[in-house]
Amino acid sequence: MPNGNGKTILTNSAITAFKACPRKYYWRYIREVEAVERPEALLLGTALHGYLEAHYRQLPYTPPIDLTPKSQAILKGVREYYPILYMDDLDLFEPIAVEKIISGEIRNPVSGRPAREYVYGGKVDGLVMLKKDAEGFKENDLLLLEHKSASKVDEAYFERLQLDSQLLLYSLYLSRELGAHIAGTLFNVIQKPSLRQKKSESEAEYYQRLRLEMNWPELYHRRYLRFPEMRMQEIQKELWSAKNIIAKARLENVFTMNSGACFDYHRKCDYWTLCSSEDPEMILEGGQFQHQEAHVELIGAAEGNQAETAAEPF
Image: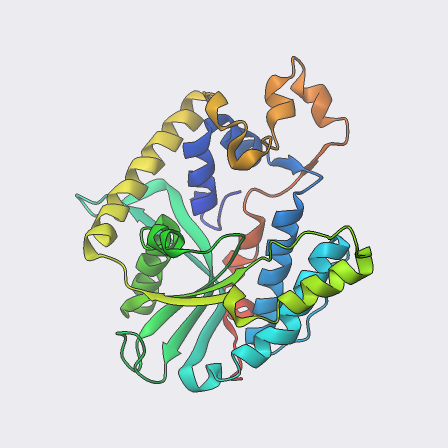
């Protein structure tokens, strides 16, 4: 999907897909297809993200209809407890933008010249301005607000986030756009419960127990992180390098298969059926896959960010 200037967009998701398996990148971002069936964990994560967007926009939220009863129970519990747990957010920060689309030149880190055929794009969960000092940050500091959900949240989880390339790039491009320093990130992490249904309880009782479990503050985590300056310098070189590698693959139309990534995250890759078939075109016509814009989350970027960035005070 090109942007308004006819250039190819590179997002963090696209770069990550290429690094994991160039063939996966091919199916998703060249052929623009995705599996019709989506993992339940992904559906729940998307639903939680949608709720948090509505919460910080002060808009009504309608839950999706394609969630399992288990995920519906978890989502209901979050919707009940999150506004109570974080009722003092108004005193902590002011939302500057919610779901803000960003885009910009990919610059040569040596010469500073922009790439001729590629640009970077993404969407930031939120941008907030602190109303008071907090965790080493000062009043009026600008922070990314990043929502995540995970089954396990420990110190190693946050240590990985500190080097997250996506957030580094978001910070870089927002700083360029706004002409202001992004001091760090406020991570807002919801931990999914690990409860299993007991033999003695009905499904209704189990779902009720899941909902009530989400009323425990221990499942909600917030962490302030500041990015190492060295990583901010490295990420620009890494982005330029990734652009060059992807551009070469697209030019030569060669997207090698990384069989070692076929079962990452303890499940079969969505595109395994296509890659293992002698006739993938026939598979594509069989109803397991559907067309989806390469960067559907960025559609509308050419018209500006008015709809995405408007955020009323709480």
